[in-house]
Image (tube, rainbow, N blue to C red):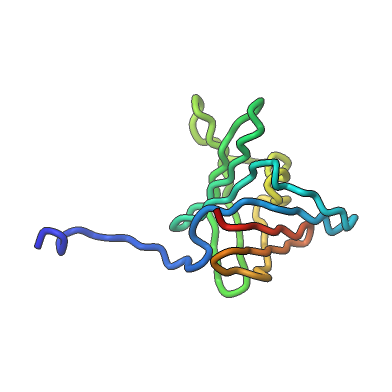
Length: 134
């Protein structure tokens, strides 16, 4: 009976929820396809929060926390904060540090080309990103 008094929150993000490894990044301006498998870049969706990680960037290790909105075939990533261990969360005012994650705008709009239990393919005006689920 005590469970009835608890409020349980579950996400309705469907196949989007979870950990995704960035596999390739295609730069649309040049057509260059970057193999990102060794970069250890990941996106993690939970609730309304997206965490971006780049484990191999030890010299400037940081997590990036963003808000996101997913409706139909559109994913909007916005309101990015860098999460430094000592200094706390700091708003990001320039999108340059986000480029390594495939994000080129502070409010990035992606078209969801594929999303299932194994793969995700996103496209913005600048890049096409292919992910696999961890």
